[in-house]
Image (cartoon, rainbow, N blue to C red; front, top):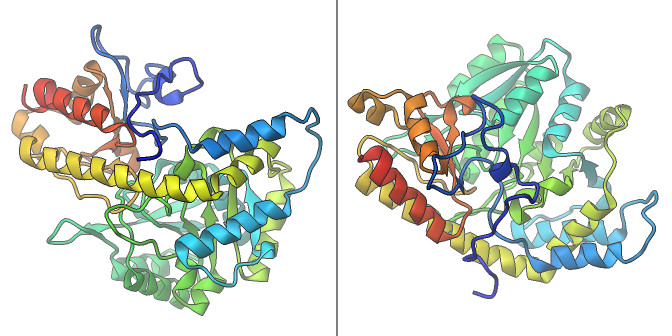
Length: 403
């Protein structure tokens, strides 16, 4: 491969919550390991790979100029986004006016909810649910109604359209958050699935907030279908949220954006985001996006997807062979696993807390899945060099599941 996905980066002291945050927030953050074990960071959803070099090059070039005053997004910024979506997602008809900066995807979620709901209103989400949605929605005074995903006979997570429709009607819901690909389950929705979901939303007059921050990280030949692309109604009903942060490991720079085709939706969302005076882009995050969306970024991402597919395939095969009582649905996108350990805990007389702690003790910094509405699940980040994935699984085999 042209790019480096094998070197183990030392992130200690480099502002990495995934490493330096261990042991700082009991009940939320993994504890420090016992003496003799180094940390394998598998909880925070950022990558342990160096980003594509053109990101640093673009930022360094801008930093050479000594003034950092007020600025407006450049034409190159908008053109980079348009070309990215045309090339990667087969999007047509995207114009600059449809693109707007968001101070994080969750900021866009809340701006949209504030534009179309009132405090106390219910919002539909699928569960398991990304903890960021849970915190942001409830902190804004809205009420979450969960429509659980169901696993079919092959273990594939599916939406329950009848349940969605019934809960929307019963709770008079007019706003829904749709996660595509889904976090934490890793489903890459097929077109017919999105079409059926959008039919439910349309029939109930719901504005749809589509979080597509993981849309570049598609595994094993699957394909992302933008929610707005499945119908003309979906195009006009949906606020889609994107960022280069998951794709290129840029979360610390903060630089998300929305795509909104409908002018009424766009005006309402932008009016809300402007009122708090928080929604201003950082000049370096703009140049980081431009650097990421250069031709080298396309090539780097293709290699990354191959690496992540290999990691996921290895981990799922290892778990199936070695960890009896642990069930995992292979993710089609993202780099997160969400194994259900309920059967293992029951057969071994262990609680999930005890299981989590036994992993933390040997340096496997995995995450409690109950925060994501997985009653007996653990969330694991596989965006590490394969050697570290293997080491983590070997430790879990030797010291935890088969001790």
